[in-house]
Image (cartoon, rainbow, N blue to C red; front, side, top):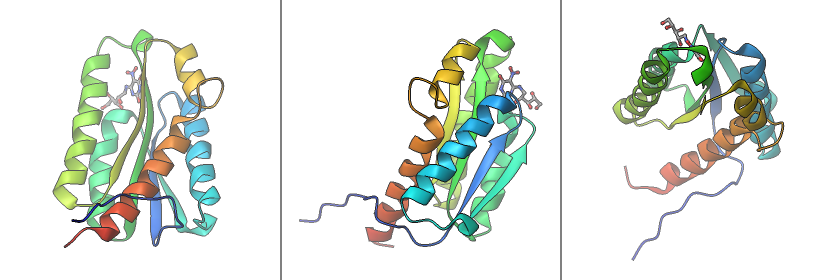
Length: 155
Ligand code: INI
């Protein structure tokens, strides 16, 4: 009987962050958190690329393109959708979430959902390293675990 489970050993391959410029001050903290998480787990800084997109809604298309390129072990999506800022919160957050899931499923490459969906800017700041951890760091660890898990699974 096989048990498959990822781990946090230094993963093979390159990583790319897809980061939304909307709420940039928050997302920059997520990017730093993700870089930190990757580096602390043995990924060389020169193996981490970044692609900036205008907003979280644009993340899926770019994430899918990068996943399809077969150049990256995982794609880590980072953004901050804040309810207070927009009446179309549900569309932006929902579009980002389902598009990111679809990018992973359509390519077989881990595409990680590191997009904050918050009621307030304060909540977003707290989840980007101030009080409640850093979602970018967590997304990096999820990426590593998934790369190592997929490496164990049968083709
Ligand atoms: N994009 C975000 O990443 N976060 C937000 O909070 C946000 N708000 O508030 O509107 C947001 N909107 C822009 C959106 O992602 C697209 O860039 C835009 O709709 C053009 O497609």
